[in-house]
Image (cartoon, rainbow, N blue to C red; front, side):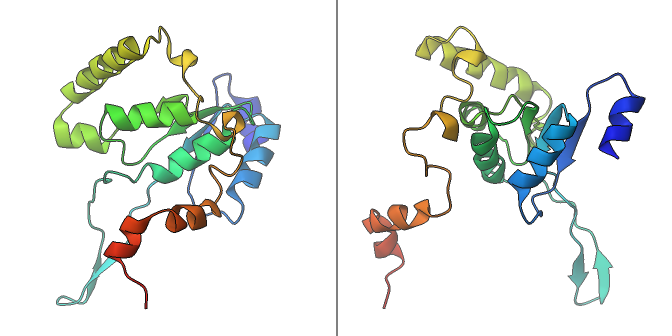
Length: 183
């Protein structure tokens, strides 16, 4: 279907993905080989809920929350420099710090929707001003100077984005064990 779409249009074709693939990186690589121009990481599905008093289905309108962007951050960091297509991170991007994190991981662009609902459209201008101030403070003239700086491909520790890293984090964190003591 992607090949057909690419042949039918003269504009870039991006694929908005859900996080629910068995092997997301492999799936993205196969789409990349077909010539996808970009990926949006990741689509938020409206999930059904059941009202137990009324015994009916309903679909609650819920905006994304802070830190919902972490899965997109991980995949942006894994994909940057390994695919030809652009990377768009979405879900839970609330402030300029989130934008900077995602750019450092390797995202080319971000989508902010819930933040606009929560803080009004003027929030975009505020975030752009704050991004510019951060870049000035760090001495960056362009986003390309720091985009992907913390992508896996550029990290000394090849396991920075791997799931096995959680063991090291847990072993080094007395704070976690104080908060959640083990028997």
